[in-house]
Length: 129
Image 1 (cartoon, rainbow, N blue to C red):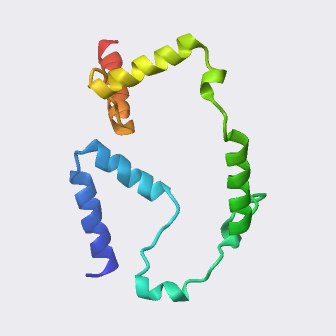
Image 2 (cartoon, helix red, strand yellow; image 1 turned 60 degrees about the vertical axis):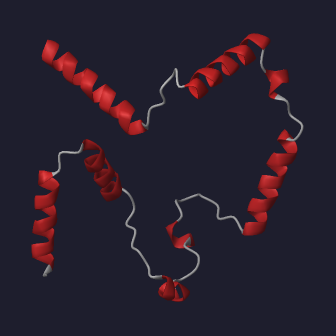
C-alpha cells in the first residue's frame, strides 16, 4: 500500500469514528511529540542521551543526582505527621470522604467522564439560549 492510499484510508476511518474518547485520544497523540516504536533488538543502536531535545534552560540530571534529590526529599518529610498540619475537623472530613469513596456512595470520574459532562452542559446551555 502506498503512502497516499494509507493516508486516505486513515482519514476515512477517522471520519467514521463517533467515539469522542477515541477521537480525543487520537488528538492527544497527534498533538504530542512524535514517538516511534523501536523493536527491542534495535535498542542497542539508539543514541543515548537526548540532551539535544531538552527545553531551553532545563538541567539534565544524572542518576546519582536524582537519587540524591529523592533522598533529600524523603529525609525532609520523614517523620512528618500530617495530623500535626491539619485540624481535627479537616482530618474528620478527609476520613468521611474516604469512607464514602470506599463504600461506593460517591462515584469517581475519569478525565474523559468529566469532559463529557462539561461538553453536555455546554450543549444544554447553547440549546437553551
